[in-house]
Length: 256
Ligand SMILES: NC(=O)c1ccc[n+]([C@@H]2O[C@H](COP(=O)([O-])OP(=O)(O)OC[C@H]3O[C@@H](n4cnc5c(N)ncnc54)[C@H](OP(=O)(O)O)[C@@H]3O)[C@@H](O)[C@H]2O)c1
Image (cartoon, rainbow, N blue to C red):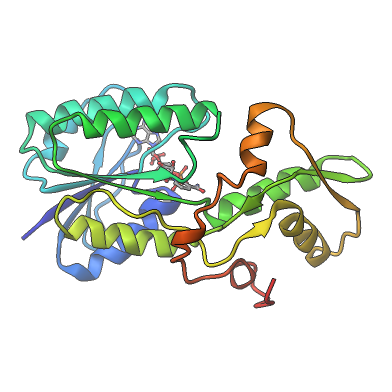
């Protein structure tokens, strides 16, 4: 029987992934920094990937690691924790290392994306069998950005020129579950949501849905970041494989 370890098992993606792996019959282990009771076919192990304490035991007998743990708000954290995980995996039974990454990280000059690129490279060069999937932003992430913009007390809402392609976390989890059960495949095709929208349209539509009529204005975001967003690097038009639309996610099933 295959044993799969999910890091970040308490996170948005990790929870959905564990739900998709449960019916497969694989033996499931998950990591968290907090102690949790084993339940529902999942054995929980406590480990902070910064120290790596407890990691050797957590990796004992593991065939596949799906690495979903991440700390986007802490510069360099993912590089450090991914290094710790790779080193422990190399010392263990060299499991298949499955990694979740983000569309556009080569082209968008953002500190967290630089960390993701570094993690991808470390995995490629680790000697472990590996698979990496890049996806676009999850619906929840896009919704949280809209929330942030909506809270700004400005009479008009300025939104960067550019596009997004929100994808459902359950679609991503289903693909990762497939990859975790397959052979190591290297960098696989990206996965994006089924539709591409201008950022202004997503914000405008969402504000109308919330009953706000504040004007939403599309504007150039300064610098290289603005140019990268305007160039569409958040999207992957050729890989619009997600099934759940933004409209379905927000719950009103409108064709946006
Ligand atoms: N959000 C998006 O739109 C998006 C799009 C594409 C790809 N991704 C990628 O998907 C992955 C998961 O994202 P998410 O949104 O599901 O994340 P999330 O909900 O913020 O969950 C983060 C997880 O990381 C774990 N974690 C954080 N620091 C840790 C540490 N030092 N040691 C061990 N575990 C640690 C947390 O576990 P505990 O708190 O239980 O310890 C938590 O389960 C990330 O790699 C992200 O880059 C996200």
